[in-house]
Length: 102
Image (cartoon, rainbow, N blue to C red):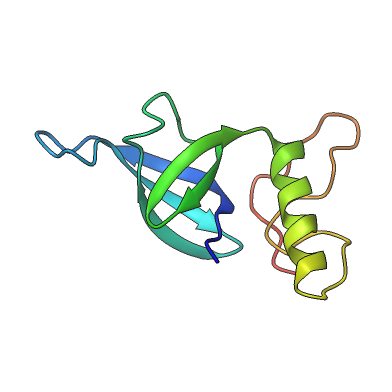
């Protein structure tokens, strides 16, 4: 089975002449991994992306990322209350500056 996981882009750097395109540092609940943006060149720092095999396949909004995490947790038999690395649903429009570590 193949699995794509949502992560939040922390930074993007261009790599001249590389077919993999720009490279993003992506946060997956506290783990930072580099992923190619060859398939999503419009992605920017702060965007949520769905990553599989080192490639960001699509850009997600935060609600889609939350829904994907919930589905993954349910499939793994975990509690569906949300992942540790995804901020809680916004209340009053304020966004947390750092991912939660709970």
